[in-house]
Each structure stands twice: as C-alpha cells, then as structure tokens.
Amino acid sequence: MNYGSFIIKLVEEPKQVFVINNISFVEIRVKFPQRRKKKIGSVFRILVWGDFVDEFIQYYQTNDFLIIEGHIHILVDSNLYKNIERQVIISVRRIYPFCLKII
Image (tube, rainbow, N blue to C red; front, side, top):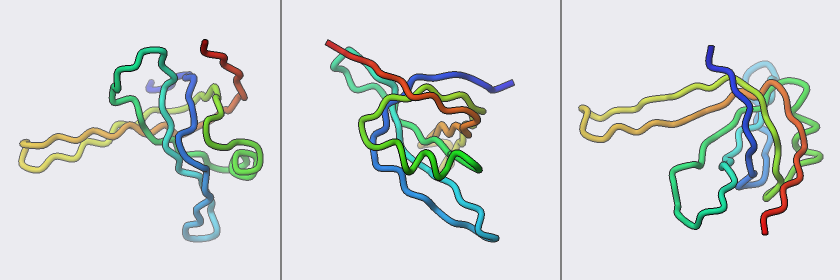
C-alpha cells in the first residue's frame, strides 16, 4: 500500500478549485524541510479533498509546516523515453499542524 506520513512546508498559497458537480479540492506545491543548502528535487504537489478544504484554506498559508498522511501517486510522463518526468502527488487523508524551529 502506498500510504505514508510526511512533514512538509507549504511553498505557495493554497487556492480552492471547483470541478464538476461543485466538488472542490486544493492543489498546492509543498516541499520537505531541509537543513542542507543543496537543492534536491523535493518539491511536489498535494491534493486536499472533502472536509479538509475549507479548514486548509482558512488556517494554513505559505511557509507553514504540517504533518500529513495520505496516499502517494507517481505520475510518469515520457516523451519517447528521452525525457522521463516524474511527478509525486499525495492525496491527503489527515492533516496535523506542526511547529518546527530550524536554527
């Protein structure tokens, strides 16, 4: 099963998106907090559905730290196998606020 827990940092402001039948979700870019200065490809997207959408938009903003639990999806887009691009998406099932102080 592709289920995990992660500590993340929000990279951009959460924005609510509506799709068919007034189903709403939040799609936002996040990254793993790191103490190292190296840039590793740690930016990915999370999807927040259902009851969490309103709370997420109301309480969380850029540079907040959260603990999330959810299902991991990896999308692979290949152009004739020359450039393989992988996108990690996590469908969030639980959200916990987290305070992290990095010195």
